Image (tube, rainbow, N blue to C red):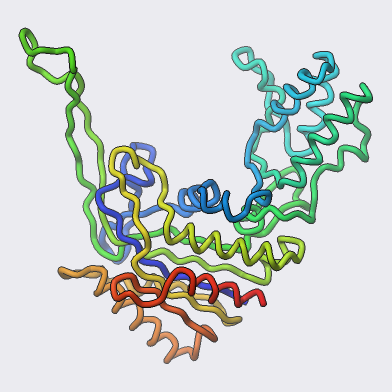
Amino acid sequence: MFLQLHILTSYPPSNLNRDDLGRPKTAIMGGVNRLRISSQSLKRAWRTSAVFEEALKGHIGIRTKMMGVKVFEKLLQMGVNKNNSSDWTKKIAEVFGKLSKPSKTDALAEFKIQQLAHFSPEEESAIFELVSGLAVGNKGPTEDELKLLKRNHTAVDIALFGRMLATKPEFNVEASAQVAHAITTHKVAVEDDFFTAVDDLNRGEEDMGAGHLGETEFGAGLFYLYVCIDCTSLAENLSGEVTIAQRALQALIEASTTVAPTGKQATFASRSYASYVCAEKGSQQPRSLAVSFLNPVKGDNLLHESIKRLEETRNNIDRVYGACADKTFFMNALSGQGSLHELVDFAKGTLQ
């Protein structure tokens, strides 16, 4: 059972997701330049948002290379000598990945793993329960005690966005949510903003110049975002906990419609809510509607024209292939149609 979301969100001048040169990310589509927000940027903004924290407290994991450092510091804090702390920490950290090489400039480098690992709350609890037991017993971990990876867990971020452990592939998790890169429905140009900063103590008696000169780049546009959730897989990834899976859908929908990436927000305050959502559910093969914008939208009312283009394309695909979903729900802030609450209720129905 799939839930598909087709979302249109307008961002004013912004630089939400930068490339290696600090410019807004772009893509060529339909022969013209579009602004782009990567799926990685979107997913991180959502899973670290207050929306996720409030809706899913106790069911969010942590992605880090630093868990071994936390273990080492905890063992020292509990009175374990440095040699034992070092030895036991390495054994625990190696469960989750290959250790980094020792470094002369980083005294704790040897306790870090080489690749980011995503820890579920159940795994983090197991780690620190073991640490407490080692400290009390003053005895190193056994092979059985080091079985810290869990196939069954309730980490919503891992269930939605997946996990890859290169050294323990049997504990990998296939993502139940697929998130496309958001692109503008229309042609854009990245613009330059030349700015100055004034020295408050410079009275201009000798030097009339600015205290700082700088340049930043930005763009503005209406973005189309496609998200597809395999709701059956989501429930399975959460050990069959349907109630938690429903909360996960609620958090994902609220975050994807109200939470913007954090890039340059202090400079541009480019926070926006989605203006339009088309949600579909059914067991049919999913499909993006990005083809609606292969020919860039033009005109004075980009939102109206983009909605019209998207709905026409959806209807035409259904006419050619047959219904691509069993049920559809529309939320349109431009016309006041639908509500976020109704959208969430519609989505939760995929798990009943």
